[in-house]
Length: 229
Image 1 (cartoon, rainbow, N blue to C red):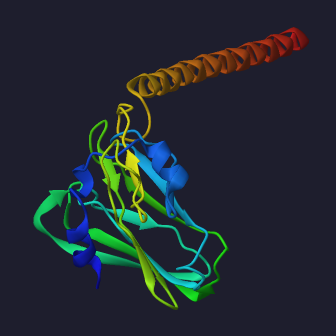
Image 2: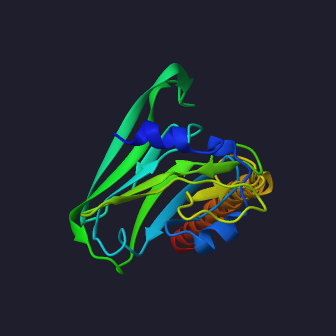
């Protein structure tokens, strides 16, 4: 229910000029570690925290998803309930498989089965496509709710400015790797060449095997002819 209030509080949204990802992740209290940062690639983002609100245990973590992202797959955590909060799109978006998206994942909410005590670390994984261009910043404002109060990790800041007290976790995109699935064009071509080579090798081995069978059959027939004569 805090979603739109916190979104309005962001400075410049996902296009704000932020410092490099490494500096943010090193000092932020809710961090995000990407498996890849290539624009257009599919990545598993790991969000982590290791404290409560002050010393109050954490009961919920709500992660806002950048507007650029449509579909997000959260990983199940055995001690937390997970919910996708959906948002209707103004216009349908092609899903790339002959269909279309009419809504997007607006927020992922993890709710603890039992409050997580301050000083214990927890992680949540989200799988999504890193939609955007090189040097774009994907910001994930995160609301940490505790038994006593909450902390809104939503602040962004421009390069050269001091880091705010509650910075939002974010990812800076690097150059695209080619096919949008984390593989470069060269890797894709190499895979295709390997497949072709594998097919050619298979045909060659089949030919050798058939030739060997033919020789064996000929030898058998010759032996029978000699015995009969």
